[in-house]
Length: 139
Image 1 (tube, rainbow, N blue to C red):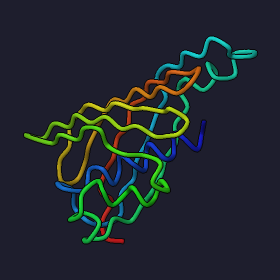
Image 2 (cartoon, one colour):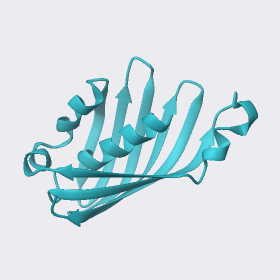
Image 3 (cartoon, rainbow, N blue to C red):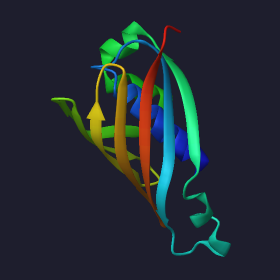
């Protein structure tokens, strides 16, 4: 599941590419809720409140190419079903196969920061998280 979180956080970082500034970005993802009915011993629920921080250098070429640039980073297993970015608002949906994971994201984006709320569904688990990204400077 941690790998899923890092992939989603990375997707959000590069998915923000059209309006973002190239350079070093820091993405902070915090799990706000988990629903896993078959959670043995409450392991998944203990992850609520956990934060993952990922830093990535976004090149000018990546920033210019948009969210499609990330498909290679997921091994072609994820695709955007919807990616709307207008007026500083983002509304996106992504699906990853063959495991059946899907995510929706809504929030705000600007050239040097973004904040989105995401909901990820996978077989036997649903997770909600808040992701914040900020531009740190040149790589």
